[in-house]
Amino acid sequence: MAPTDRMVGRPAEGPAQVHVLLAEDDPAVRALFERLLAAQGWAVCAVTDGLEAVEAWTSRGGYDLAVLDVRMPRLNGYEAFLQMRAAAPGGRFLFVSGYAADELEPRLAREEGVAYMAKPFDSDALLERLSALLADAAARVGKEEG
Image (tube, rainbow, N blue to C red; front, side, top):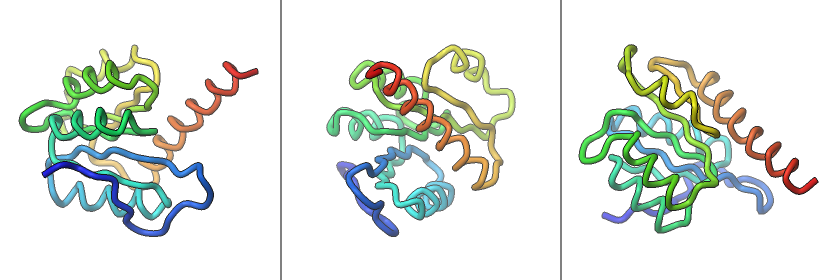
């Protein structure tokens, strides 16, 4: 099954809609995140593993944001990230993990446009982190243009 953008919830106003790629292997968590992001008016493409995430990312030429579970079947979140960033480097990435001692966090801290959150977290914290990533991207574009 090839992933496609699909709108869930209300559309964003105007042409500046945020496109989010969500890669999460737990169906309940994926559905919850998808509803939450769509409620913001964001277009959400939800996939079940890292390989599908890379396929969706490369077929679209990137997304504004990608939310990647760290541990997924077929291709983990970090391996998917490396391929996605190489294919279309402009996006912002949020890694989420249910493993408190995930060895990935220190490596991610050095990457520009990347954030990490340990599960569990509440919806406000998730939206705050994603909004900060978007604001950071907009600020960088403004500096480059100005």
